[in-house]
Amino acid sequence: MEVSRAPDTGYSFRDPALLRTALTHSSFANEAHDRSTVCNERLEFLGDSVLNMLAAEYLYVNFALFAEGDLTKLRAALVCEGALHRIAKTIDLGSCLFLGHGEEHSGGRERPSVLADAMEAVLGAMYLDGGLEPVRRFLLPHFAAGAAEAAQKHTLRDYKTTLQEIVQKNKQEQIGYRISDAVGPEHDKTFTATLYLNSNPFTEGTGKSKKEAEQAAAKAALELMGEL
Image (cartoon, rainbow, N blue to C red; front, side):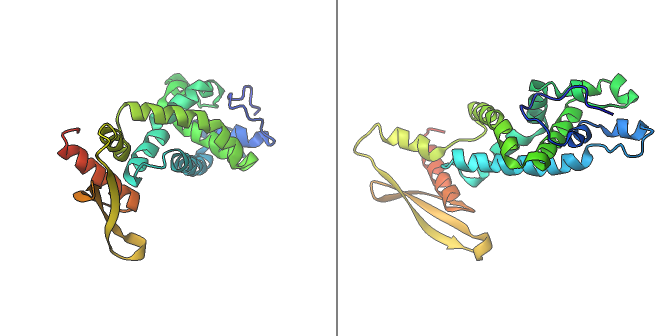
């Protein structure tokens, strides 16, 4: 079984067998007379982990002011079935898959779940064949577009920046943050941040990290100011 057409990832596999496995749906493997035919489910498992790690890395580097909770929401938007389906469509992955007869005739090449799973499998295969860098290079523009779309839909907000922009309109006003409390064991602390307006305590916020607590305090200030 040879791969008649490779998905347009921009990556050339040194081991074509890895790509072939990534493109093999379980329905095809179940119908194959050759017992050596393996489906892509194990590669899908690996690709899911690689995808989540690289998404977390991208967000950590490019969204330094966002709290942990918002980063988690954004990562979910980048790695969900819908996002993977869109990526798969851009590389015409559906036309490259090996499907069983039933899956073929029921529209499997266009089914979002099939394409999303296969996309993860391809990422897993790329990682095994060439390491993290080619996977990172392939995903970077998709992450950038997905993050921009999520921000436009207001699925997350950087409350500190929003508050700073408002305060800067009045040059006499100044804000600052101070971690006023931290409770719990080292591995599971809850922080409290106090937001100061002109050196006076204004609002407080809590979170599982200092940045998250500061974001919560900024959000509380925006709510008091009627900006949310």
